[in-house]
Amino acid sequence: MNSFDTKLALFLEDSRFHNLVVFCNSSEDTERRVFTIENTVHEKNSELRKYQEDLVGVEMAKNMIRDAMLKNAPDEIRVLLLVGNKISHEAQDTLLKVLEDPSEGLKIICVFPKLNLLPTLMSRFSMVYDSEVHTFDKWAEDFYKMLLEDKLQDVSTFVKKESKQDSSQKMEAILRYIVSKKIKGDLSSEVAKCVSYSKDRSPSIKMLFEHIACLIELNKKENVK
Image 1 (spheres, rainbow, N blue to C red):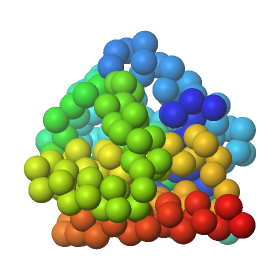
Image 2: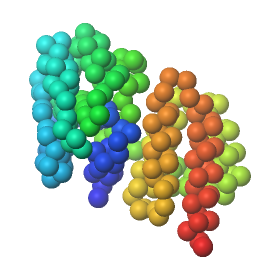
Image 3: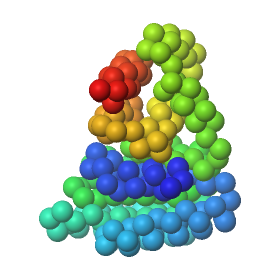
Image 4: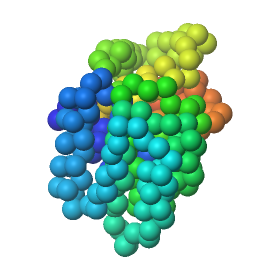
């Protein structure tokens, strides 16, 4: 299972995640991602509604919000898939209404090229997938294998000089590594919580990373027993 399949499966299965944005590098990349999303959702027997335009405008955003307001059957997962090459600022403002307070069982996936989305919109996505080569994947593997004191020292160093976006991507890279290695225990779900918390407006990124470092060490000790 590749990193996109892993992240998509985690997103669909974990009730803490509601909004996923997928950034693609080309139209071919977009087609591949959309094809994978549609197949995966159908395999899970979930409802899928797709909205696709070259330029996503206010009317399409309003249609999506109207469908998002529909109630789900108990234990039902509904997926709204928005695909476009561009999206207007007005449409982004409109989408904030549904991204801020998604209903239970509703999953929203947006697939775009590398766009400069409004910060207020980006902050509402609980998961982000960038189909470029993941800059921090090797770092995540090295971080996982470090001794606890080295992890904490590394955290103290990079949180002072890196942007919140880079720190969040590092956190997601740790989660990808843990999921890809099928590490036993609750480590992946606990780290996923930290990733979700990192999207809040004013989390302590340093404290979240320190918590992850300690979780990794506890998990290693439990698996040695």
